[in-house]
Image 1 (cartoon, rainbow, N blue to C red):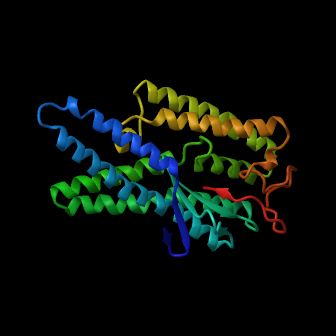
Image 2 (cartoon, rainbow, N blue to C red):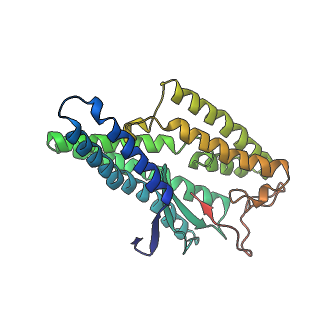
Image 3 (cartoon, rainbow, N blue to C red):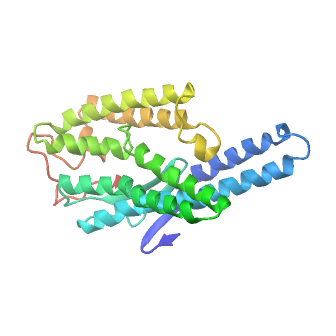
Length: 267
């Protein structure tokens, strides 16, 4: 699918995960009670279809905000990868060559901040819509509030971890290696806390969107992604990582290379 000149792809993992989710929810149908199985299947199908339409529509708007902010400063979206939808959201693959660190920070913030006007829009619509439509609008307002907060979590590879790295480097007192270590330690701590709160039932975002608490799965994914950064750090290869490859590991390392094409960054 192409939106404007930006290509949008759906990963096979997205189809697999949500296909399995639909199957598991349908299997719960016999426990609904006499005669309710057909309506349970219909409900699950409609619910997940609405989630794909509105949920992924919201996530695409988030990624397009990254894309347009990137282009505003002279960067570009990867022509082949574009935006990819995956089970926990979407990823935009961007080339930030030539952008300063402050501009990269603005590009990073553009995604999470895009949820604020969408939250306001759905909340205002909920005040004037009919009861059933008003419920959907309130749900979408809550979705955008949750995503606004969620994306600022400093769990790598969430936008919050890149914001943390950019803010540290903008102080001009922190080396890239040190910033990477801070991101790794913070991400480990927040990811473990995220998993703990999810498994103990004290916190869940995905429960409201997928009818299942999948936050612990996302937390594990963050731990795996963070471990990759840690591996590169311990082997002196942090510049090979897309998040940190654009900065020289010296104290005056606050501008992107503008003469060499670097690996795309996903946001």
